[in-house]
Image (spheres, rainbow over the protein chains, first blue to last red):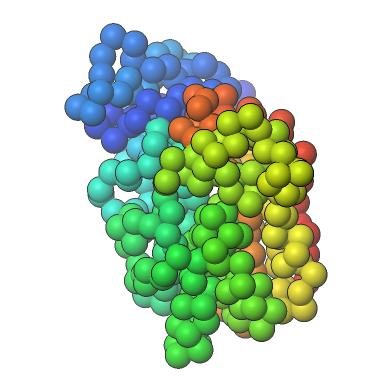
Length: 76
Length: 253
């Protein structure tokens, strides 16, 4: 059965740490970086569990700042 | 495969729309405006309308919309966006003219312009962001504020005897003969975002096909004004706002 593997990149400088992508992620891939902030003082989102990502783009669909890019590979 | 192997342009399935400018928006973290801006930018790009689209920006939080979406814009006086859009559409009937208004702009000071533009059946698309509060000026009560909702000017909650009932302007507009599409959407989940995008696409198509006025109400959040986190305000919106403003098509002819 083909396996879908995804990955996302977050523009850390643009992210405002609103956490909507974390809530929308069905696989708990994303989290806010608790120990770091960007230039504007926000805890930005990052892939906390990269293995879990399925590239569904739910995070990108709800991101108000359009700072998420989604990549997807189907491994056969 | 490692994330580094996956992340290359050949595998990209979603990226920032080209029509969104590189500036950071001034919106609060988690604001629905950003999502709707992104949807509009995606649609204008997908429909190939960037040369023909003219937006009319409101007064309110979205007043700087012209800085964020890279198409032609006109900034209207408070509430007068549908009147300005009428002129634009009559002068350049081949262009897509849309307004982007909040509830204070569309349902309070601009009620007359909104209702008469819709009644005349102007071939424009109206994007109506309803967050039940005056966000820009500090969270005062708006006509759309829910009964019992606490705002800066109704600190004990909105009362019917003192403040009247919430104004459901989309239901009013659906009664008019000039409107061809009146729909109410939200952008709090990925599924809702996709539906809202389809509704705005339909509104743009109606405007280009000269079918009449299309109104897409987006039931939104204002987490700063509501004094909640973005995630909490989405939940509060889904629970309370949609009870008074049920999602779905009110009119689609």
